[in-house]
Length: 101
Image (cartoon, rainbow, N blue to C red; front, side):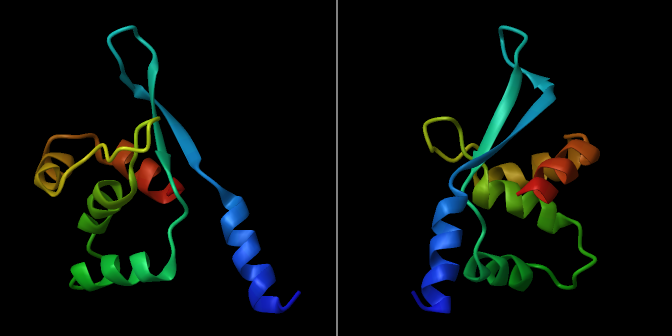
């Protein structure tokens, strides 16, 4: 197998990942679980282009909008949720999730 085949196989085997968010409890008091597929370079490029510079922390909200999924693989957030994530959600929680992704 070639190196590129090994690299592709590695990426494919990463599979769906998840993080438990205890601060965001559901109606039963259970932590929210956010899922995502591994980020690729194309997606990173899209994110970096949205940011005027790499110190622009709004990219953290963009990551959640782009990648956060529910257990069924549906997007959790819409682009319209970005401002809410930036102004009305605990920034430490958003940062922890975005960094995991």
